[in-house]
Length: 453
Image (tube, rainbow, N blue to C red):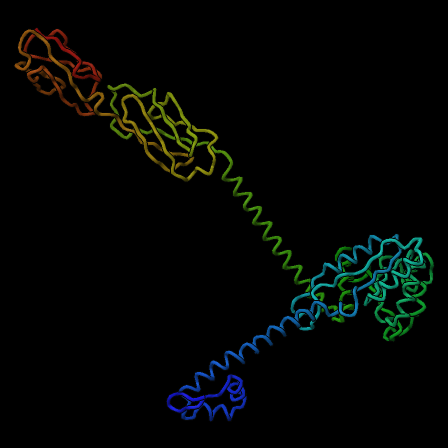
């Protein structure tokens, strides 16, 4: 295949791929005079042919590795272990089954040793009484499908024909070294029928020896003796010893990891409990009711001649709830009870109205002790406004009120303002003529009439 300039190209991507595989051919091909077009084709060939094959190889390897880890022991055996026990020890057997199946192998150990993270299932038959021949054949089949035999050892199981028969059959299968006795009660090799916990078949296949290093002596895991601490701690340690033997791991390494894991769990649990308690405490703190005291403080100049306010009203707007207090006097402290603490420190709407004082509609930061400043309404008692009526001309009269010289307009309207410090409820009116009413009372307006002759 040639282009317009006569340069030849590989006939297919397969030839490009073969060219790339040989380093020498690739270099000569790359640096040839025809490289301008050939380099682009080579790169395309790499991405089209080589890269997909490489990615497919990586993905296939990852999937196969994951499957191998999860099915390492299930490929040959359906069960990790067959738990053999006497019916009186069913509670202990179920505990062992649950503990083994729920144990999660540390990720680091699982990856480095290519071991499954969980050892499930374990077979546990709950009744060894009146076993029929068909049932015995089924249990033998289950033993054949189990890699390990865990024998729950106690003085009761030592006398069980089912437990002894199971041990003999497992030895016949050639798995003598995969029998793990777990002592829950009694003493092994005691020679006393009342305390002996090893079944006769176990003692026969694994006779007691003076040399503990000999292969024919079996290693038993004792729930009551292994480790120090509480009974629960000992039971956990014993189960972990069984797991270590099943997986061929070093027990101390596995136990140290388990101790660290449990410490982390306790620390995490303590942190969660502390967080929950903290949240409950905060919820209680902010939801409980408090009493809020609001002092109504006068900020204007006190005037003894003016009446005190005793009929004031104050209200607090708390979201959709409004709390009111009536008959409030200036200078008093008003107590609002049962206010949710969550409102303390927040801005709330406050309203106040009182005779002779300016109405207030403001926003304030609510505290358990809050001051609400109020001031006199200078217009109520300080704004004087009335009309002169008589037979003469009122606009020509000279009027004196609160030390001020005034004159009425052509309609007889008299109007002035008195400073707050000089305000009164009644003002004397003096004119250069005859007046029938010598005082004007506040508050007053243009409808108030003062008669003259």
